[in-house]
Amino acid sequence: MTGKSIDRWGIIGHERVVRLLQRFVERDSIPHAILLLGPQGIGKSTVAREWAAAVNCLAEDPAERPCGACRSCALVAANRHPDLIWMQPKKGVWRIDQVRELERNLMLSPVEGRYRIAILENFDLATQAAANALLKTLEEPAPHALLVLTASDESNLLPTIVSRCHVLKLRPAPEDEIERGLVASGVDAGKARLYARISGGRPGLAFRMHQEPEILAKRESFWQDFLEMLRSGYAERTLYASKLSEDQALLQLWFDHWIGWWRDLTLIQEGTPESIVNVDLMQDLERIARGIPTGAAASYLQRLQRGFSMWRSNVNTRLLLEDLLLQMPVISV
Image (cartoon, rainbow, N blue to C red):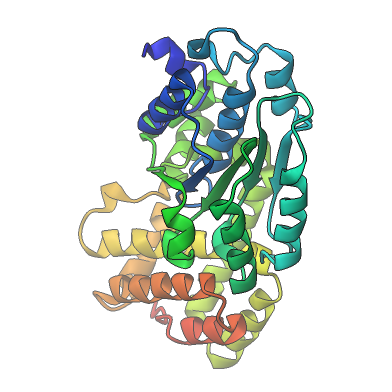
């Protein structure tokens, strides 16, 4: 397989995954279900979209798929392909009625493609009933139906679902590749360098920071919350936990930023500040690292990561956040 074939997919990083998907297309050995694993912003949606384009591409030579030029590829790019079903959890949770709706859609014959393809984002946020309902579809797939599931962590999926999917893990892309991709898309070199660094190897997040200014605005808002909570007492932290718990859709982003900041604080306390991700916050991070006990950052980072896993398991969100915030170190400077 040539490098040109890989480039056709237009995906930054994830070369191993793209090569495997391209091989499936060229050999006409299309798996009926794929599970894409990786953190938010790593590029799961981009890979899923290009896979959908490739399997229904009209190019005569399979090695040329996705061609990006045919009617089918154009419809996928515009999110208007009649055989592409793109679904997300409602209010942060997948429920059984959505899976029932999916089953009905997948029973229909393709309108103009080879396959009817359903992309189910963040299926690790499914209820037990929804997961069990999907299992039946995976066990008895229609010959023309393909499923693509995305998830941050397979531990929150039914093992029987994982076992019936071809699992592909997306790993962080090199920072320089993300930076080059941003610059090639017209992003200012300085901004591209910053976005690539603070994305933590997640191309999707880097591009969203450029395309959606509110992403950086929310990061700044969370950072101000972070600084305030470091100095706050019981009442303020409890109130903040209650406020946070009311917006489940934002919690993924909140955990993402807070875990990143505590990871950076850990690196600074361990004497490797050159490895931190949030370089634009270096001065404040170094001041905070000096103001909390040695080792406190690493300890709290572990607590926060456990809390994130618990949240993905549908625990009581408000109580979880209260516990996390009340255990957070207090800054002394």
